[in-house]
Image (cartoon, rainbow, N blue to C red):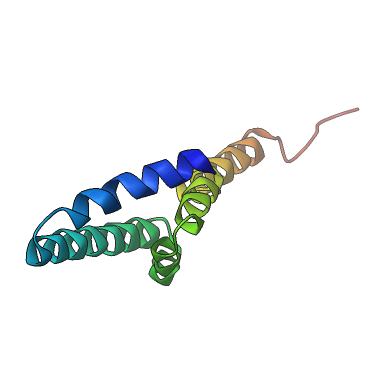
Length: 98
């Protein structure tokens, strides 16, 4: 956990040394990009964009990104369906004599 704490504490300390208004702008841009791009990626993969709200919870965002990376993607689903369809096409309907 000390590695995660060091990763999260460094940006927070940097924001604390900025003037108040600039720190708020940087924080707002960061959150907007995280929510906007995360929702866009989730929508493109066929999932609800509301899952992006879990990215706002510290430490849970890393777990969700990890789980999302190993989840089934639509391209994999289509490739498996195409392979199953190709296997059905190659099979003869009539086994012939014998």
